[in-house]
Length: 448
Image 1: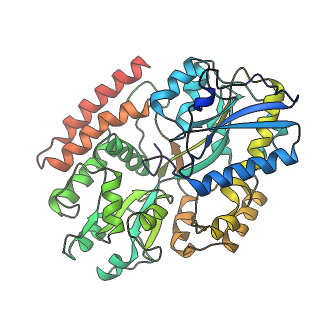
Image 2 (image 1 turned 30 degrees about the horizontal axis):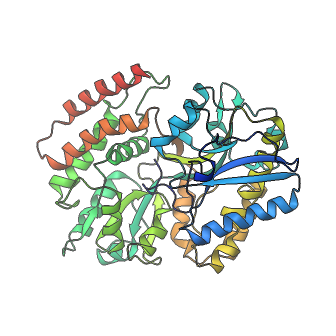
Image 3 (image 1 turned 45 degrees about the vertical axis):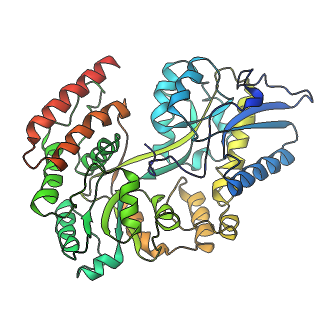
């Protein structure tokens, strides 16, 4: 799932525009002028005026620099709509260069709709600068099928102001789940409707967070071969027991449950919540949409110290794309997204001028000198308190980064039931909940 829960708001997309509705989204590779023509998606919608202009400006500058390439962008919201994605995929209607979540990769490859770009990536100037673990996501059976564009990892967002009011050190966020529980109890003790820790438990979001919490304790949702559930374990039990104890023994999670992301963001933005799990891209939403303050909001690494859930997105290539289109698409990706400090996501000076937040710790896409350059430009244009995110950056270095499980949404739906039961029923049988969930997940995995 996207860390914001509504997918990244500055991107949009993946349905053909009405003007092209009668034809395939992919192109034949040549426009009337003899240029190499590529269709791409994830253009922000017209309603997102600033982002739309940035995207169009960046395409224009790319075409000026590459006069032999014609880029046709398609927009819609969100960037990938599950209701249309599989239909477009099955019908061979994807753009030449199309947007995907990390969790899509194997599915797209299995359907035979993705081009193998292994022999072309040497032409992508930025490829070797990208984080290896993100590159690996788009590699299946030794073949490269796509390029990562962004990545996120989960952490613990917390309210420094409430920490101070509860007598806690705002510069020392909890590093273990025992500490989370203790701190949440103190924060809830402030009264006046203050909640120490909140979690999701509906609309598959509870299962998503259960997975993140399981990873943080060193557990897994499914076995390494993807065939069996591994939630009915000591680690899985510890996740549910901790939630149960905070909810019922400590009363630190509030009485209202079956929460989803918007509920929790509203609590945090209003100053009534101490902590919740999320990624850094939630912070601007908390400020711009929910009434929060950048100075009060900080993020720490996932408690537990063993792992964290990662997600993100990238682009793959239509199997019908010609060699010229693949080469053109790689050049376009380099220009738009993969040049440190420049492009649609990296032009921090432009973002700052338009009052967009600059200085958040993610996405951190690059390594080595490229990362140093990106961080240098970001720091020079920062307009948010970067010191509030340093512990997150430092702590992530020691965590195992783990992608979402296969058949993620189906599995999350099952795990939602276990999480919601624990948070709404004081006498919930954790052992039975995990046993039942394990059986249902085995069935999902058996069906593929």
